[in-house]
Length: 615
Image (cartoon, rainbow, N blue to C red; front, side):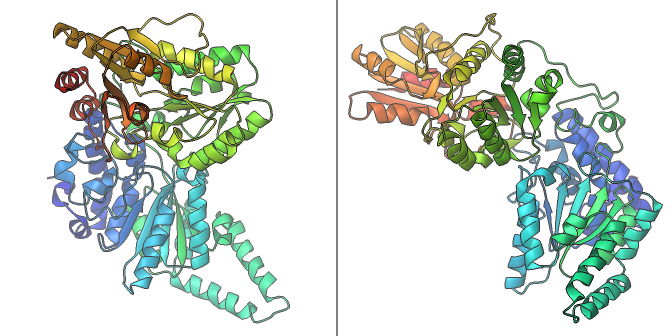
């Protein structure tokens, strides 16, 4: 019988003998590997956090005590230990478990998360709420070292140090940001520093020297500096935290001892644990970047399925950007910790001096790009659509207001599938449409993406190009990109009965729908709108003047603020009828993209049926 068979919740976990816990951690890792190999998911970060998670749930009293996970990539073992192991095989499947902590899913998920660097602010919020309500529970935030590159994490640290609330921050350092060597001496002193007697002596010394006004304060600071010279963490100490570490993050029983000692410390405490991303699975240990977020793979060999067919939009963007940069030494590329995901890793290899990964700091990325543009460079800021939401003020204030020629390459626009509501790029049209001086466009296929990138560089204006995740349509690529007329749509197919207005990857569905309608004797015109802003009013007016009274807009974006809204406003007061197909006013759940598109009507069949039902 497996040890894991005896554990359904943290209460069961506490009944185990401590010597059983390392074996339990191995079994949890195997469960994660088996499931992710079938469903895809965030493998390496979750494997690295297993021992920490076991120790946390062994020491703390969940769900009364609050555990807040940063990003959520680390939380698979948390799900397995909190009454969800029987559902774990449904991870990231439509109507199954989310790949991230989600309040609606479990009482053990006290705070939902998908993006980065929020955990410390959220933990402080819980600590303040607890004290205001005179309640009694512990608050623990787990944040990865990569998430510490986000400014919000430091805003939370600063405020927590100021308020001095009882809370614990566990810095899960997988040696990809601020790693420190962890040896026997460091581990011993980390444990020693958590013993109450040592803290008591330190507090008494500080209290004594503070009485001497002439030298007490400087001497007290000197004592702290001597302490943090012996141990890493001066930054956190100066921000008001008691720093503990670094400690070995894969020694479950040692972690339990340290957490037990830390548990009742007063004020904000930061425990620095060193872990290995991908721990326990050799392919993920050797290539943690590839296994950070991975599709289906062979668990025995680690081999992932090779993509077939058309190149992805990301590949086309990457190749086009490199070609343009070869001819223009003012082009620079910026990303926010997503070089492989956005495709700028190829640019980085060829032009290392012109490539900048700013960490998980989207706001900084945008303002940095704005100043590069003001300094005479041509910056391309490649960020996922959903992450760009974090930098809207920077786009408005620092780029658009100053009319600086920054190009925003928004990958993963529209539905992204199994990562769900926190990651769907469902709102970029809506949050960009109302910004003055900003050109917003979306290619119908991967060939048009080339032209739009060329157009953006040629415009000398702020531009956003949004394109979807995954493979393109397989169209032939022009040898050299050309410049499009800004704000001008393209008639893909003439027709006299109805007009289908598509934008981005929905143009292809409009063409297929028109073929279905043709079989029913309905002559449908198809227009590739290309630009959300400036919006081609003339082409729609021409259709109206030609006698077309029925229009359907199709977009993979929220209907509020999107293409359909613009068309309805234009045709308001006319005798035309407009139907809008897009995403509803809700956060779309996770699931296979095909399932989601069918559910929300983003298919050629639904477009055709909508047309047939129009009066």
